[in-house]
Length: 191
Image 1 (spheres, rainbow, N blue to C red):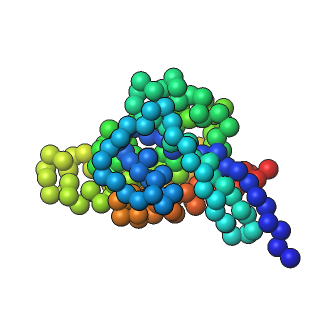
Image 2 (image 1 turned 135 degrees about the vertical axis):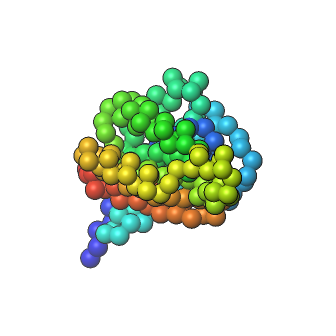
C-alpha cells in the first residue's frame, strides 16, 4: 500500500520587471500566453496541486513578486515562510541576469535561510531573433552562462537547478515548477 503525503510549499517567483514571471505563472496555471506587459503591484498569488513520484501530493503556493525596485520594501514580507524560489531572468536582457545576485540575497535575507532555487532563463523564443541584430546580440545570455551560474550557487550548498523556458511556447514551464518541488523535497521540505 502506498502512503499519500500531502504538503503545501510556499514558493516565490522573483526577478527583474518584465522578465516574464507573471506570464510563466499564468501559463503554468493554464491561463495561456498574453504578449502585453502588465506590471505586478506588490505581489500576486496562485495555488496549484501536483502529484510527484513517491506518493507526494503537493500544493504549490506561488507568490509572484513585483520586480521593480520601488516595490522592494513591500516584497520583503512575501519571502517569509518561503520554501523555494524561481529566480527568473530574460535570456535577451543581460541586466536581468546580472541582477540575480541581488535577488538571491534579498530572498535569502528575508526568508531567513538559503532556500532551494531553480534558476530560469526565460524568453528563449526571442533569442533567435536577437542573434541577427549586432546591437541586440550583446544583450543575449547564453545557456552556458546560466548553467555556470547555477553550478556556482550549488557549490555554496544550496539546492539549485537551471532550466530555460519560453512562456510563449510553453517550453519547460511545467518542468520548472516540478523541478522546484523536487528541490524542496530534497532539502527536507516535507519535514
